[in-house]
Length: 113
Length: 115
Image 1 (tube, chains in turn green, cyan):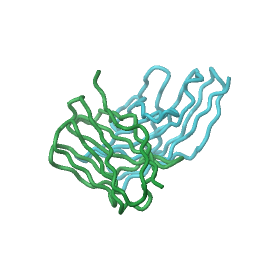
Image 2 (spheres, each protein chain N blue to C red):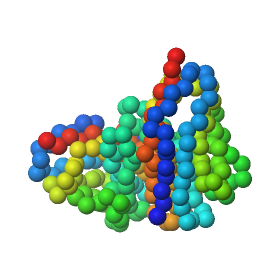
Image 3 (tube, chains in turn green, brown):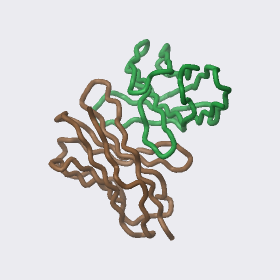
Image 4 (spheres, rainbow over the protein chains, first blue to last red):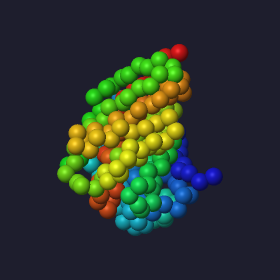
């Protein structure tokens, strides 16, 4: 079945460590996105990529980095520079087109202590 | 800058009744799209319905309909015949006509369906 995979579902790290969240899609979508969700709040865009080897910062990119070496993969690294990394992280993808929704992965819940 | 406002942090509805979830938006774009997503407690985001800014008719998808009032910049979601499985967080989102097509989300409404 086509879809978006995010692993792991839950991730625990010590403060000061970098951590990489994976996002893989087999939908053949060109565009991919990373969002952050804090408790009781909406989603905020971290980074997005419209094509392989190209990505742009979203609204809250500080302390995060991404890469897009393959169409199917868009990993997100949460660096030690991110002041409040504990959150729920959602990856999404879409195809070009005005009426097309974004498809979301199941999310990764990151806890940093 | 775009902004989505959802003024109802929580809503309750009796099973089998209809409920309206409010969403207002602010944009200077002439062409835009409005989306509603459902987020159950498991966390995944489920697409429900889409309305384009130039669509003349309100969108409908099964039990979901979108009450689009362009002049008032509102895009309220109407769920008819509520079911217990409708209990979830609901998000309104907007996409600009720009090439990046990223979504701007509201803060969400937690809907609880009562038996």
